[in-house]
Image (tube, rainbow, N blue to C red; front, side, top):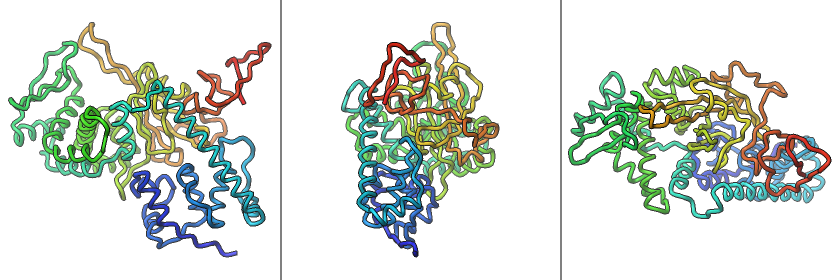
Length: 469
């Protein structure tokens, strides 16, 4: 039988626009080229069964809204249901599903509907996890709004990124920080000053618009001082673009909009110090070796990691990374993921993840192969960082940053070189949050998953005092 020619370009485009994804971001999620997706959206090419299945796997909740009005679509959704690794039992072979669809299409549609109901239940549990994590508050706090807005943009802002790249190209040759300082003086009449070292509570950066004086804490390392200067230059030269982005974001409160302008200026500063094309080329050349990148561009370890997570320019995207920063208590204070891995929106991450160990071992890079409940494997790199104080009365800041990619891209990620990427038991099984993690045999479980029935045997005790169905 000849394969069906299914044209669903309008549906694919509608889904992409509704999720506010660029065409390159959606292509990465699905696992096809940007040009192929563009042809699909324009109905220049049909969607094969394999592509339909890829859409169903990449967007299980959203693609499920597409009515299974043909055999190919029903097959894709049936396979997503029958091969979901979060459901126990052996997956159903594709040939068996094809026969079932032809002979009992109503049964296949029922399977799909049941799977969609299961996914909605999981989404409700994630929402419950979010609500519990933030104390049941329904209205997001300003910083949460800003964080979620950046995530919705894929952590890439084309207008600001290109403007920062143009400014970087116009800087005089030499050390980036010195070139930024010179441009501040020449173009904006900004004089630099150093704040007194060791004063608790003093601002790291302070700008006086009247005197045109920029004061920076002299105790900061050179790369931090350079970043703060780049932040100020971005605020001065990209003010209109930053204000326009903040206005179009449609955030609820004035505080959120102000926080967003700060975040946008930080984004522009990173793009200015690490111009897109040059940084992406160097990252590919160095196989995303963070230390090599930071020394080449004169930035900090954290700045280089964060910048790698923003390389999502349409037609010139870098590797899809996840990035986060975790404090000593396990709170995730920065997070973004261009991969299928999604962090808990509130609270901490899985205790089995190497980032927690990294917090306690500063200035040492740890690597780990992990596997999430959906069967996807990731190569993770984590490093503990200490920002020392200048006085006994000021505590040092300690945290860890983590960067990782899906195992399929490990050949371009130097930190995967010494890991066994294919061994059946070589990956550490992690979850997103104990409240929604389905793993029944985890000895690090903090509390049982929501919506599951507990079983307690007074005559038997394992590491965890209960089991669940």
